[in-house]
Length: 157
Image (cartoon, rainbow, N blue to C red; front, side, top):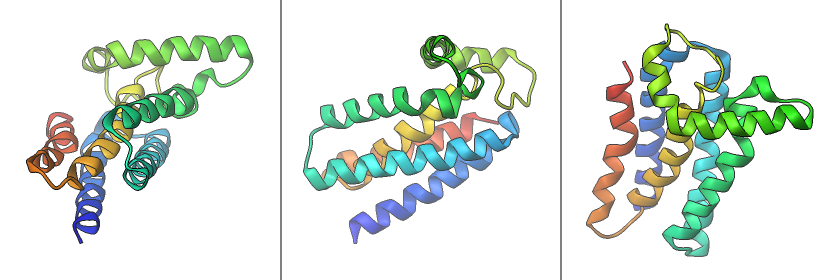
């Protein structure tokens, strides 16, 4: 029952965060990113729980997932030949570090401009996996599941 309740809570939180962030992006790329990243994050959480892996394994899987799907989802303009993919990887990393600041200085909506979808990728992939894993805990850390995606939803507008 706890697993179902946590999954429903996180699904609602993902939808609310997506709706709250919509004015920032207003693009089909954002909708695809939210759907794919949250499903991938949920899949990682299910795998980690099923295999009873620790937080380090979860962090490793989430990091690998960001690196694997980051270019097609968050920097789609860099899909192409190997040199473009290499530039895309650099933009993915800089977007993870500085994309938050860049979102504050660019006119809205940003669509899929440069690497400005990277913060959304991190929020929805990492946020979904983290929120589910926290919601499914038996100890008091489970209450932290409330904070992550809702914080983004509140701060986004």
